[in-house]
Image (cartoon, rainbow, N blue to C red; front, side):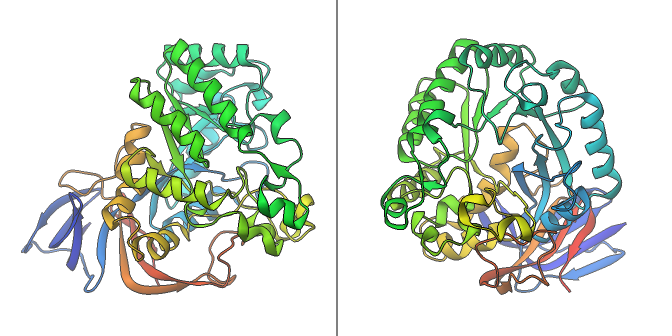
Length: 423
């Protein structure tokens, strides 16, 4: 099957260039000013741009065990609609992905029914209970790309050091959700001006920062690769900066919501603004934007966390943490950061494609001849309304529900086949 994309602006080396692109089978066969080959299908992408397929290092697919919220089929359809061609599945499923059988289930289901590639993150500890090292070596042989207890954090420093040393033996990246439970307590939002104003218990920034400091020191001792999930405070960023300056193998990601929202979004008691880590102060948000712009933050990840309506439509302190993110990520960041000239389009695209691929050594992330034909076509002048009827995810828990944002994804290709087409 050959497909030609004509009249497009193709993203190459940080620039949008007027090019035509030929897909032959699963690969990009040719990128040129004019393609004379005959094709089975021709797509006129006039007015749109072709980008590498986006890669999400941090997503919760809820499959197996909580498929009323999301499953691999619905999650990957949602990802494809947002321009994502690959996602990394976190292990907090039921049962926890802490063994080879669970890894193989996710891989097989994604291969048979997925609209995006699914890479598996195995659990760091058995059942993610923070008590015993998981079967990392066996899961690595089965194809996991990292280990994490995301949603939970190993509190025992001695065990965490053992986990890091063991992972280092197999060069497995360790992805951490940094949270000191004693400091976080039963907090609901960021501990600051807004928590005091509206009377909700706060989560101090120290709960994140203390754990990042600890895990950097432990990773340095173990010689391990450490990736910090959903970083959210200015002081956390300084800890990462110091680690990188010392040559440690430390990377970090930031979510779209921590880049564009702050604690003031919680004033309405909308449970779709409740997430962990919580939305922080405006100074923290600005620090994250600056760190993304200057490359201190390695990439953007959605932390896609679906919850059913009956779970989110409760009193704020009883609702679960987390929001969906696949379908809104590019639109939210393009409108709020690119159009306002806080970051460049190249900055945004690279941090959603090439850079996440680099963090976990995944294929894809660039448009070049011979590369996998994983790409998306986006109308940058279009608009998308994120209402209940149009959201593909089973869950609708997003602060951008019923909002209209800039850009519209027209097509997504995975392995040369259309995985999403705008109707």
